Image (cartoon, rainbow, N blue to C red):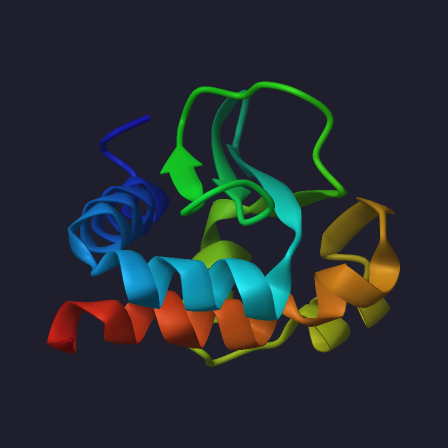
Length: 123
């Protein structure tokens, strides 16, 4: 699904996270201590990312493993607005554009995580 905008976010977040200092990564693990599996749908296609902030220095990958604390599913268009801060998980959930399974409170914290991941580039 690399032709979709969500893939750009996934790639940037993964690269920036892995390039961040171990201290910064450990800080994110300490603050969020949650694993998120995000599925972005576009028609019949979908892409997934796992943001695992529970173990060690954390990991962001497209390889899904284990049982994440939070499963999120959203359409491509809404995901991009969400990732850019133009929308929030609360608004998407209330309008039935975001499906959530698992730890709902942790799902609501993901807005702050997106901000952190978007700002890692400038670190």
